[in-house]
Image 1 (cartoon, rainbow, N blue to C red):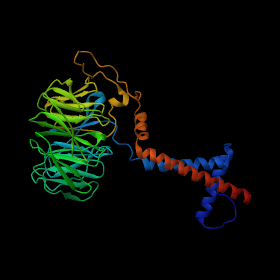
Image 2 (image 1 turned 45 degrees about the vertical axis):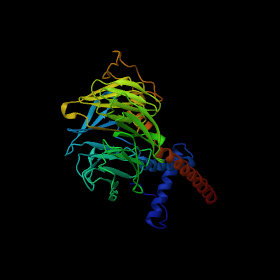
Image 3 (image 1 turned 90 degrees about the vertical axis):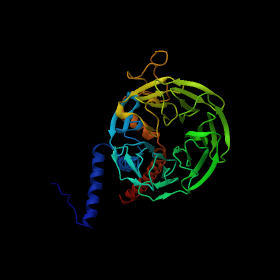
Image 4 (image 1 turned 180 degrees about the vertical axis):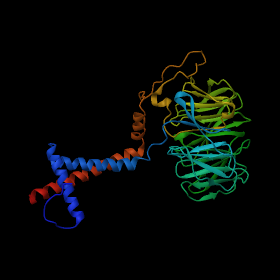
Length: 424
């Protein structure tokens, strides 16, 4: 062991720090690096460590699945790019409803009991159950930190502040609310009762409920994404109605030629199913969008709104914005999809991975070509992860913090060098 000679002054900690500074200066000089640069490298390293810790929670999903499916076998993690079920998360009772947290880190599942099970998407581990006031048949999570469960047996909603918060119950609804819809871009939730005409708009943060009615019996709901409305599918008459979430005014109504079953909202329009037929409703007309191979029981759009997932008895078909089939995800009898939830980020298709060998031919028998997207294809999981992190708003905010820290380091180094020069 080499011991530095010199008078013993101050505490052991002071001597150790002085020795460390000596080694830093000596190593920097030996390497031909100015002392100032060496100190800047140390400061940069410290900054990188801080930012790594700060941004470690920014990755929104485990990088495998971009669609999660409730089935009798459990929650299925689906990689749409390869049309594969990557993992099966066993839950008892079997899940029937799903909802993602707005940041995509947690998936909430219920099987019709009072227990709602959080699933950590990074590890796929089951977390401690949230106990609602009664049996939950539908889940929704809008912007914010409050998970909402529909409890038709009590004609109420359950509000659960996530991460160990309180669970409360709403005032009475007009009926047994069993249809519920939310979107991570809006803080409000829409609730209705299948076959009835009442519609309730709920603000979970204040527990306020506002009621309106539409013509016909409601069969499905979907939030109109960034546009501040709720889309309502009705029968008798068969139509899609858009209701403004603030004023509760019906802004448009478009008639349908058949009874609607399922509904979702893409970036530019509503997609509704009737049997195996899918229709695109833009607020003025209803145009034929696509024909599925089987009757469609549920619909959900990818988070960026570019693709539609259609659940059928034996699988899921994925359609692009023009109605062309991009994927067919085959499922066994125990994997029949009951509900779906898209990860709150761009789908693997949208991220430019294109069509793989597992893609199914379109209606004309042709295989769909590679997708043109704003993001080039990538085969690197490191690149994909970096892209997700860079595009995540908290990371962009963290970059501003990084600039501030670097500036503070530069000011400190200037001061330190001036003091060192005076002493020398």
